[in-house]
Image (tube, rainbow, N blue to C red; front, top):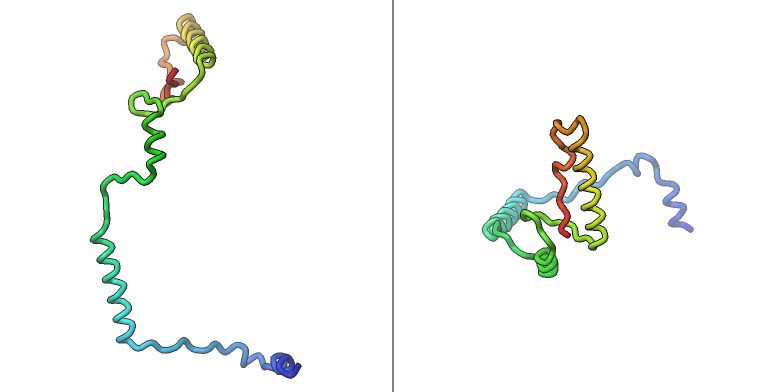
Length: 116
């Protein structure tokens, strides 16, 4: 209990005092800086900017995925493909007979086609 009472009796001026950081000689700081610079220069020499494959499993999966014009395309079942084809056909027929057929169709821009 004596130690606890002593802690309670500390004045506010004593609590606010922050001990100074240990003084590091200038020569030591220079050596630390030189070591950091050497480490940076060594790492800079070993930089690689060529393409590297990090995950063989991801590469294998990407190679097996279907592509259209180099971009990945969706895989879909035959029922989905038929439904999609019918919807596209109806859309095209509606566009042919509508008065807005002369306007350019911008709805398909930027859409990745599906591979079916």
